[in-house]
Amino acid sequence: MRRRPLLAALPLLALARHAFALPARRLAFPADHGAHPGFRTEWWYVTGFAQAGERSFGFQVTFFRSRVEGTQQMQSKFAAKQLLFAHAAVTDVQSGRLLHDQRIARTGFGIAEAAPDDGRLRLRDWSLAREAGAWHAVVPAGDFALDLRCAQTQPVLLQGDQGLSRKGPQPDQASYYYSEPQLAVSGRLTVQGRAFEVTGRAWMDHEISDEYLHPEAAGWDWIGMNLDDGSALMSFRIRRKDGSTVWDGGTFRSARGERYVASPGETEFRPQRRWTSPLSNASYPVEWLVRTPADIYTVRAVLDNQELDSRASTGAIYWEGLSELLDSNGKRVGRGYLEMTGYAAKLRM
Image: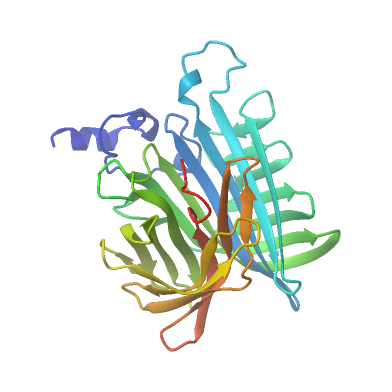
């Protein structure tokens, strides 16, 4: 117990590779927007809704960094000590299509970079970087392209205990986790050669961890929702293969800035309608009743088929897509993303 104040004062990189639980600490920006290569896994995740006249789209850009433990002592500059993965997708609502692409490379040699001092990520010609208070995503993909600026309109939202988010019953099952909700989106989105000037709202998540999932966990269900009144809701549960909950949590921040962190047991995900993938044969709940301390919401996918096949990079098949948030009276009060992992096969991190 006496070690905690000392550990809380150390830089985040110095806390890596410990054999004990992640300690609470104060996240410091802009440095903690950047990479933490001493930790095993990390991701930056931007999802949003964009509009161009009558056309509407969902989009996601995710960069993953993975530390390769077996190569850390190698002296060769060719040793793959850090891997960078990237996923991007566009949900074209009116056409009912999901477009997806992915990348993977080792860091270094001018091919891939995850900067440690601020949010600057690059994988070949894809990039996600902080510029003057905004995340700028440039993704020239196969059937689509993104050149979007996602500008901060609210303070950083620290998840869990001031940025330390528990993910299981054991203290080491945790992450350092913050979000930037209600980002103002502007820029260009191109679908199969047709360009659209768009505006909208986005959500950014950044998580850093050494040990994330409980041994019984198969995956998780997660929502990040921008409410129309300026509020923000994040809710999740870690799920066993039989559908029971290992752990749950979340955070609600009102438009006035009041923050409420859910205790374990206060968040519940109840499946309402399912869709079966013709690709993986996985059965996903595409409509949920989600009980949170803020309200009981319905989360409803805008398009059923938003399954992503990332076996060419991270090796997983998962569902991630644009969804609507309805309050307990059935009124749409927000939009955001629903993510479901571990339905096609147990997730391994």
